Length: 160
Image (cartoon, rainbow, N blue to C red):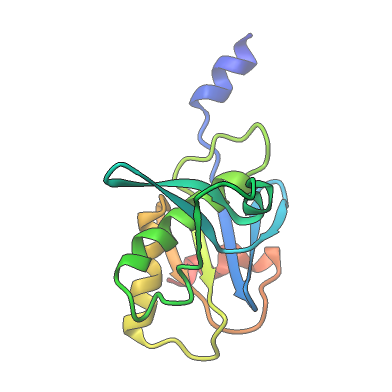
């Protein structure tokens, strides 16, 4: 009983490393070492004047053929379409929640985002940081380079 109560108040730092590559996104969580890969897409259905997200990532394959949802890949048009920013943020938020280790309360993780680019301008880096912060991160760092090993996550976050 006391362990459960202590667990409610104990704050465990959570780090998520998000790596984009070839139409896939890989999320790696610490602690727990959970590695999760999915597609950065979502399905949207009109409900009155509002757009409702019906599925994210692989969940889209489970939609019924008669479902009127439209599949969107917001990261494909992120640089050209401002509306894609909000959708991309929702995709990241959903994928972070889906990929979290079971039993962990995931409140505002520290995030390293690794775009599939060899160079990221300062404006692009700021856009990626805003994207991740809008998805619920407490801290966001943009990393460009080779794939990171989990042992390096903390060092990258401390450099920023």
